[in-house]
Image 1 (tube, one colour):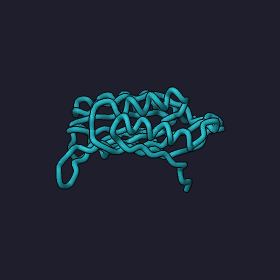
Image 2 (cartoon, one colour):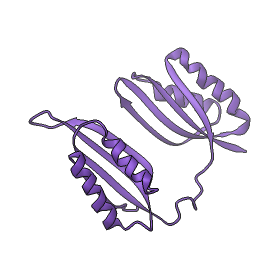
Image 3 (cartoon, rainbow, N blue to C red):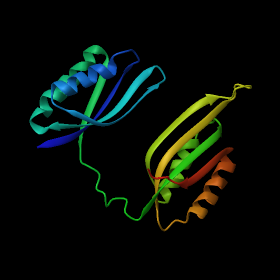
Image 4 (cartoon, rainbow, N blue to C red):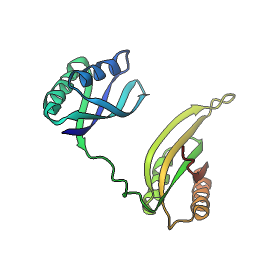
Length: 178
């Protein structure tokens, strides 16, 4: 029998963190299924989904925890595969936000989505600097699952209103499958 583990790892950025993590995975017969990794500030951060034989979990988690001696902080959590029925009746959409950076943009948008039972499946955000002026610009992309009872035109209209209040542009479109 196999189990899924969600592994999170952080450490001061340097070459070799991914190689070291995957070395431990391979040693214990784990297979990396999905991952998201990024440099955030001066720290490398990874979120990794692995599948591993149940009888090897204890040794794997023990060895991953020992990576703190190499300045890599690792946590693990058992997880279950996503129930394909969970988002039945929802429409996948892509949401983008861009504009002058300031506090509270993500909170305002995510609170609005939460209040309408819109599920954020993935999200990335960044602050970049405008080429000529150097002004900090906030950029966000998210994949969301919208209940079918919410008309895309009404969702778009409400998000545009939020964007006007936050001085950012917000767009939502049905996700292109493929």
